[in-house]
Image (cartoon, rainbow, N blue to C red; front, top):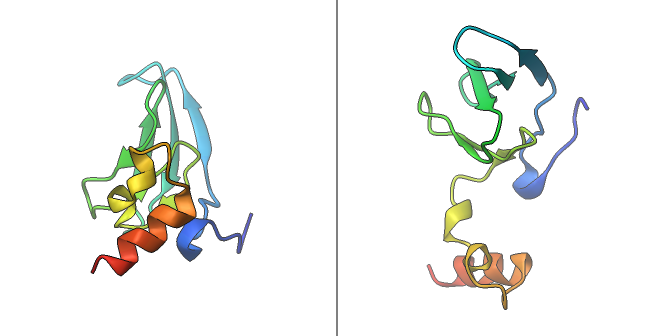
Length: 93
């Protein structure tokens, strides 16, 4: 996946690894944060990850999300497409 880019040009996690049966949880997926380089963990049953160390946001697949993704109206309004929500968000400024 080296060099693959996702939404907003963010690089998709290249070093995602699955870790099973650890002391702190039954299982989790881990990867190195593209923002600070430290390990990010997504535990089974969770979706998006807000990494407290540097504030980076990742989806369940480990894709680094734009910092302003929550402001997109398509997140809560099913009548607005993702692209329309992005355009509305960026014209409201």
